[in-house]
Length: 143
Image 1 (tube, one colour):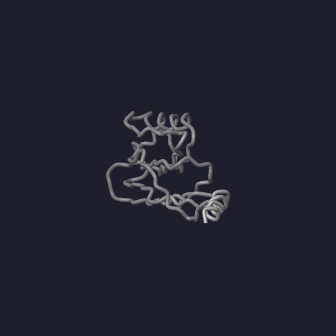
Image 2: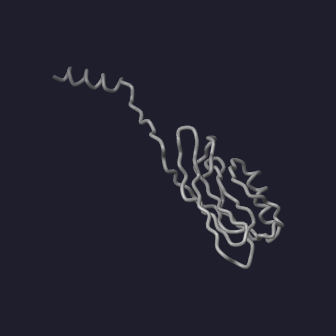
Image 3: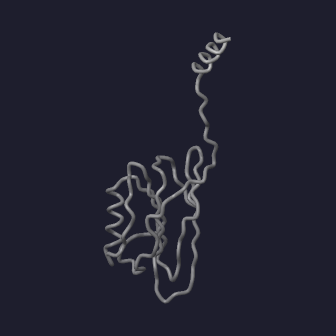
C-alpha cells in the first residue's frame, strides 16, 4: 500500500503544473494622479490630447508645461518601473469636465472609457484627468 502511495506521489509531483489562462476582457484598477482644469487661457500651450506616458522625462515635460502659467498643479508620484500614465486633456471651452470611468484590458490592447460633461460658466477652462495603470506596452485606445 505504501508503494502505491509513493508511486502516485511521484506521478503527481512530476506532472506539469496547470497554469491559469487569463480570460479577457478584464476591468483594470487604476489610480488617479490628477484631475482638474488648466487655466483655460491657452497660455500653457497644451492642445487637446490623449496621453500615454511610460517615461519620467516625458511626464516631467508635461508637468512643466501645465505649470508654466499658474505653477499650481501637484500630482501624485508615479513609479515608471511599475506604472503607465494615461490621461485626457480636453480643448479649452466654457465650462467642462472630463472623467476616466473605466479601463478595459483585452488580449492585445487597453480601452479607456471616459465621459465629458459641459456646464455654463463665466470662465473658460481646459479640463484634464490623469491616471496610472499597471505598466504596459500594449496599444491604448480612448472612447
